Amino acid sequence: WWGRSWFSRPGVGIYLSLWLQPPLAPDHLPRLTLLAGLAAVRAVDAYSRGRASLKWPNDVLLNGKKMAGILCEFCETSAGDPGVILGIGINVNHSVEDFPKELRAIATSLRIENGEPVDRTGLILSLLHHLDQEYQAFLVGGEMELAAKWSEHTDMFGQRIALTRGREVLHGTALGLDAWGNLRMRTSEGREMT
Image 1 (cartoon, rainbow, N blue to C red):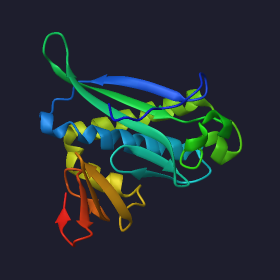
Image 2 (cartoon, one colour):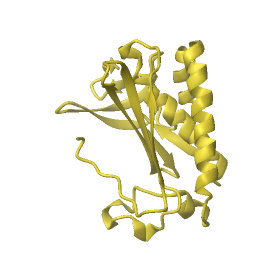
Image 3 (cartoon, rainbow, N blue to C red):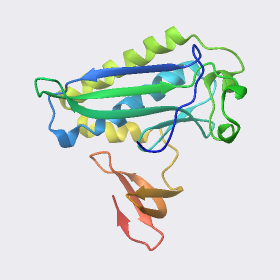
Image 4 (cartoon, one colour):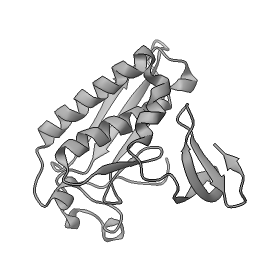
């Protein structure tokens, strides 16, 4: 759909999908991507020798390289009830050779960064714990705190970025997130936008 692929050999990564039916208006649902990113970065930090960081809207980085990604798909049950399929992929025990040559400079895994294998089961349990914790807080009024919590785990603010919107690529500086989790940026022309 986005023209991108996720590469992995069996038994080395974590790939899971969750079905959620939050009692939220449809325009609030995209924030679940931020929520999942926050949970993933906290789980990864518990197993990493380095500090994981978030890249808006759906990537987890370790030492500046992508090691996890989040996708949310909004859909309906056969009865017409809205919901979200939340997909998370984490590079856990991949070696450098597991990545295609063209991705080795931009992708990594916990094993590569730590220098040793990581317990995938423990990481899954940690991820599910953090997902549940953040989801419950989100449902009881923590929506507005989500952007602030997410912002504590990113290094992208103040950095030059290229943002693709449809067929247009905008260049500028990442300023932060608004209260709804939208990225705020200042374009090269000096215009502030979300």
